[in-house]
Amino acid sequence: MPDPGQLTEDRVAHTGPIAAPLYPPPPWKLPGARVLKVMFETDKEPVLEWLPPKLTRSSPPYAIIEVAEYPDSPVGPFTVATQYIGCRASFFMRGFAVQSVVDNPLAMAALREVWGYPCRLGEINITEKKKKGVVRVDISVDDETMAEVGLREIEPIENDIARFDPTLTLRLAPSVQENVRHDLIQIIQLDPEHVIQKAARGRGFVEYPDGSDWALLPNRNIISATWCTIDTELPLARFVLPY
Image 1 (cartoon, rainbow, N blue to C red):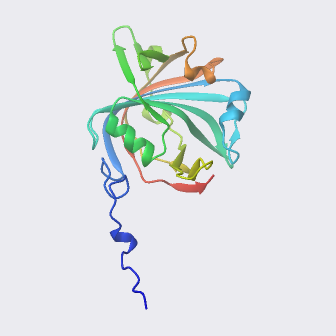
Image 2 (image 1 turned 45 degrees about the vertical axis):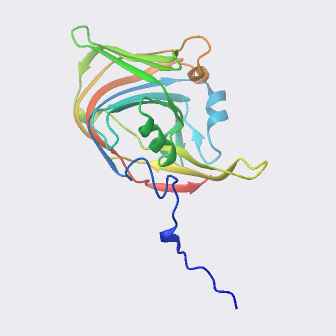
């Protein structure tokens, strides 16, 4: 009579991201973050092309570029810029992450593997000219500029005017089978807590150089632009759904 093995799931030993991650598990507390958020109208065709079937577009179609600088995190300082599609899950406003750039390799690994952000490693330079009332962010990958975003004519606003909607990402597990692309695709909703310390708004701008990957969601009209200092987090998922 053969003897079955006794290795239980909680003792499975791997050197992969589940058993031996390069980073601590969520939630991550992220105090003192500076966050730029620019919303703008865009074209319907790319919005529909890049939205999962369980989500619907808003009318008019719009997109968001959010840049968050985190000076204090479990993997050290990092900055991440994300391009979102404004959408609805059922009747609720959400932002679906299309692509991201981050400047810290450990943060990139965690954002991809845990939270499903579609990150590439790159550079994000934030320039704040307080006397001129201007914030400008340059986002680049491999020395090629993806986008230039920011706001001008900055003026303070009440903290509760600034809005941060929950976001949606796709978490993927690659397949090791021929002609099978993914073993797992999940839709993840993140709904972090935000404590806004300071908020401002201004005239936003979004510019793409010729050939930029980020130009897939063109800027047709700026809706709003805010610049905030907040205490926030990268939390556990609020919801996880099959694709």
